[in-house]
Structures are given as C-alpha cells and as structure tokens.
Length: 144
Image 1 (cartoon, one colour):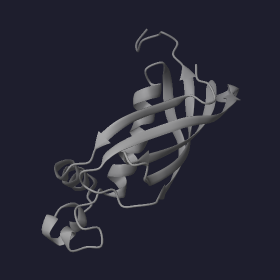
Image 2 (cartoon, helix red, strand yellow; image 1 turned 180 degrees about the vertical axis):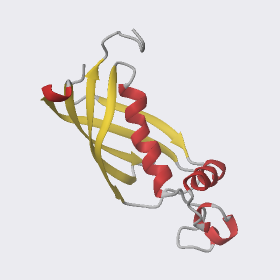
Image 3 (cartoon, one colour; image 1 turned 90 degrees about the horizontal axis):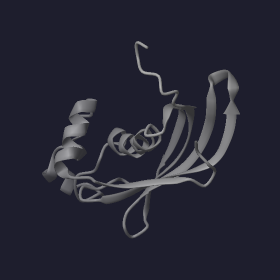
Image 4 (cartoon, helix red, strand yellow; image 1 turned 180 degrees about the horizontal axis):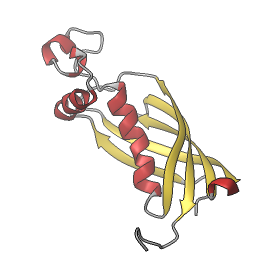
C-alpha cells in the first residue's frame, strides 16, 4: 500500500487570477489577495496567496496521490507559514511518509507525513506535518 520514505510531488503556479479567485471563494476579503495596487505598497511588493489557498493546494496533493490506490482521509494537519506565497511563484509541493502505524479498528493504516512547499530556488514557504488514514480499496462499488 504505502511505505516509509515514499514521496509525492507536483508543481503549482500561483497566478494573480487564481489567488484572487480562491480568496473570493474562501470569503477572504484581504486586499493583499485582490488589489494589485494596494498589494504593491505592502512589504511583499505584490499580491500574495491566502493561507487557505496555499495550504489547501499543498494538502490536496495528498488526496490526488493517495486516492489513486487507496481510500484516503485526512486526520490532522499543521503548517508553519515561513514566507508569504507571492503571485508568480511556480511552487514545488512535496510530501514524504515518515511513519506508518496499523489502525485495525479503523480498517487501515495511519500514515504520518512531513512536507514543504518551496520555490525553484529551494526557499521554503510552508512546512507541513500531517496524518492520513489509508484504507486499501476493496474493489466494491457503491450499491453493490
């Protein structure tokens, strides 16, 4: 199913359009996500992604990766926001399995993960830790 050391990774480009769109959908009205003129005058020098956007994209990699071969359910996640995620960042999202614990009562394994969202230059924007419940797919379909 999964093994310690297994890694998943993908890239994601933060654009002015997706930064504003996601912030609006999340109800985040901070002008640093919507108003390029105002954002240019901030300490960040331009639009930045909301925490909901950057952490959401970061953790969504796990669902994308693990649900190809298992049922996957998030149990807990924590993030350290090291830097604001700027518009134009071509981010590299990476998660590694650091431990696996059998969870017989839950019918699967609890997988502990550590990860980071970085730029191409290696600068870390977000560090994350989390746990997923992975359940081997039975091959049954709904209604059967």
